[in-house]
Image 1 (cartoon, rainbow, N blue to C red):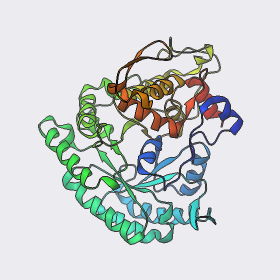
Image 2: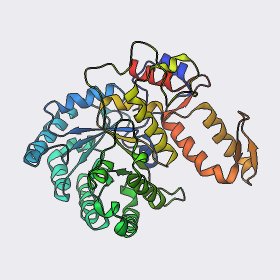
Image 3: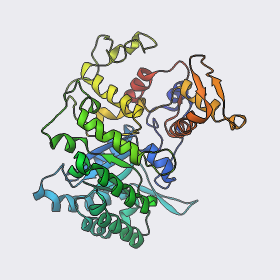
Image 4: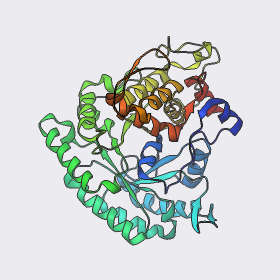
Length: 398
């Protein structure tokens, strides 16, 4: 897999100073946690799910969640489980064996996770998947707290042992105990304790902002981000505070879902129109093209990054390319990170940016630089004259 791997190599060469690196489902967890990017959710009941997975992979999706929880009705759970077993068999028919490593490698299959409702489903599904479990990267664990999480993580450990397959957990932080002020600190401490205990199996933490809003009867409009809903923004800040630290104790925390999309309409207007969010940041008039209801998504992706989140839960394919385009490291960011991490700067100090527009303070900016270079490895570094719109249009054209 490779981000922007669905676009022609000649096009990539024109976009990137350093192209995104390839990775596989067997890459180190640290790499995969960053590489998740836009994680596209799909109901597990879709009758042509295997075809959908292949189609989305061809469009640049590198991680998907096949959902047995909130996206389907209670009455459809059993059918959803049966369908997953059938669809994994279909996907497995498109795998090849790598003669050099004697391992099976999925072709056109992204990182796949199953969102379950209860721990029993983890062990049951792994047993039923049989040899096709090699296509599975792990499970998404709903409404995660220390109490509920223990049974899920023990089931995952058992399934990993019996299948011989490395399986990751992605807990979803969405419980009322986390939202309510009087129980938040205790709940966060409990989550920190149990995720640390199972650290090798926790790939990333996901935020269930829709559930947070639901508890108070709220829903943000397409003109507002999750950070405009203060009760939600406060929870995000506290989650990052406790669980997203850069001192080796933290995890990758992914951005919340964006709920809005348009069906049957072009994402871009025929005429050029300058986006209010991108006003003043564009390199040229091509910045024009962003339609109004995309502005909120772009603003939220930028705020995700500013608040310590990486990647995003997506419920519509049109959200994937914008998330990935804004995940590419700019040449300026890369230049600053490189300067900060040069061996001769190990003792600290202050440097003027090569772009002569900012101060790079070696010690305080080191963690940022390390994270930036890891993101650069999987999303690439843009050429100096390449901006968001170039990456967006290339991603859509691919």
